[in-house]
Length: 158
Image 1 (cartoon, one colour):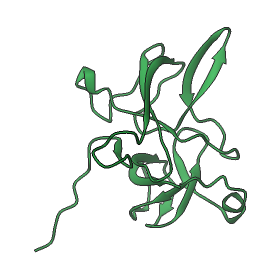
Image 2 (spheres, helix red, strand yellow; image 1 turned 180 degrees about the vertical axis):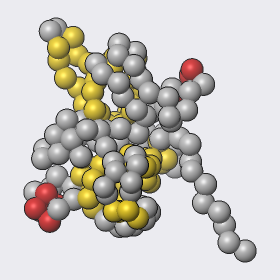
Image 3 (tube, helix red, strand yellow; image 1 turned 90 degrees about the vertical axis):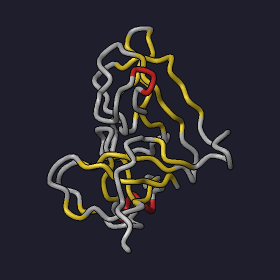
């Protein structure tokens, strides 16, 4: 009997200590500077004297593994974005953590493949150059094949 693999419908999949404690630092005191979709890699930036969050903006730099989570407290799903000036629930991830990330159209990802930031909060396949430069901080945990629309993928932080 084959098991059907269903979408997890949550961003944070695992990686903490047994029992779920201590694996991630969760923050929710920063607002979105632009629209952010749960599952995006995000980063801090300063505008004027205010620190805000935005999708990770560089494909060529090392990313601090921080991901936007769904708005559980508001009974929202992984498909409900954060709007400008809305508080963002985010997790700082550690190596071994797993999450449900986003791939843009044009990617072809296989299980075990190394990935890096795409420069827009999503992930992409890592090149040999970026993998050698330690920019590839993620690994696909499943194959999704050729992507023609934004698609979610289970991701390991390495």
